[in-house]
Amino acid sequence: MSTGSGTGAPPPSGLVRSSALSFVAPAQLPTTADGVPGNSQDMDREQINQTDRLVPAGLKALCETCSRLYPDQPNPLQVTTRLKYWLGGHDPLDYISMYWNPGKPEENILPHWHYVSFGLSDLHGDGRVHPPPDPSPGAPSGYGFELTFRLSAEGVTQPPLWPAALLQALARYVFTTGNKLCAGDHISWHRALDGGAGRLRHLLVAADPQLRDTNTAHGSVSFLQMVGCTGRELKAAQRGSGFEVLKLISEDTNCGGSWLVSRVNRRTSARAVRLRRPPPPAPPAQLAGVSARLRWQPWGEPPDEQPASPSNLPPSVEQQIKETLQRGLNTMTADRSGPEGHMSTDSFEMSSMERALPQIPEVMQGSWRGEPMVEYLDGVHIVLNAEGASLLPLAIDGRVSHGSHFTWRECGRAVTLLPPAVGGAAATPSRPYAAQGSWLQVIIPKELAADMSAQVASLARLADTDSEPDSEEETEQKDPPTLPTTFTWPKHRLKITVLSDSEFL
Image (tube, rainbow, N blue to C red; front, side, top):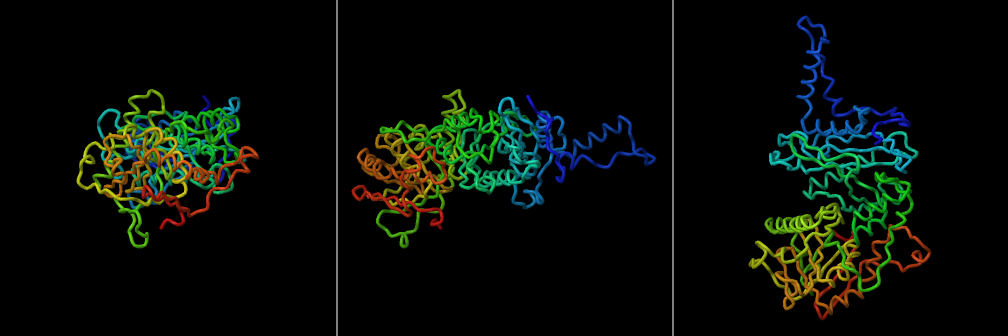
């Protein structure tokens, strides 16, 4: 395994070496009684002990893990925060280290810079950032993971700072929402990762291929690698499996190799990624829900007279949604031995909730079932942003038509489409629209599903705006629908409006 800086490492001139250990370790040398600096083994041990006391235990364990992978880089280039998060700063990551990795050219693994975060796990263990550590064996440290990113060094002699800013943005999302990332997730970004004109505009989440899970004094930590992907690859992950797309990227010699090195100058998707819409009937979809911008209101009341869906769910219901999604995740984990069993229930913006909520009766367990707060409506008007609406064809053809449910969720709001045969739901075929706070359930009968499938098929093209065409045939495909646009099914008293993000206030 290639680990160190090795031959070919670019000179890091002009960058300040500022690792966590180098920042706290150079304490004043211990001296003898007469004031002369000591150099005995006892003094060396005292200095080491002093350093150990200064370096937080969680941070020390992570640095040791990185040092095992990069033994010749004990003092890597590093980005640190000026004002720590626990002192009122906005950046949760205390440090982001940047290691030089020569790759394995013989295996098409490019030389690259390896960015590693410090701060999503509990570095200190004293409650200043994360809750006090759980002493149970195997309990996570903090959020239980750190983020990594591998950037190809093609044409780069020094590591740029934008990957560090990217990791900080992702960390802020996790701290703000409490939603964890898992391998197999996808993260829609909708702009070039490096701020330029590149095709890598989104992210997939993988297990770091070299940094293994680590046990620290405050719990276990895994390393999740952010992998740049194209719009086409994102769509493949949304409609299939993030793990499958990661595998296709790793097998393409033009995509950075099996260590999933991101090449910002990559212009095309992995060769094996093909996103032709399957002929009807569409196969069952694995994607059970996404985050999206949304609101809803009762049928027939003008938006300027009727307030949108309540801005927040009651805390108990919001917690139940999270627990229900996690139950679905745990159920799939117990039933599967492969990596697909570890899909995240939520992520960043339009991230996947793949394979969560396997059985809708679970949604209705606990406080939801029979709770008097349920309100039944005569009809509803649902409003979605473009990206959320782009998955409406999949929700109908790939989920509801196969007896499964699909959910859009934004903070305290949620909309779930359900097939009629589902048991235990608050909504029923005779009362198809049920709401508790801002959690809306909508029963889609077979006749309505067929009509919706035909009408909303064009919405799938809303996700094509940043995908590169693979052929002239694709280049000549119809443009996506103009926004805003509204679909209405008067017989069922259902209306769906699609807005651009800029139109959401």
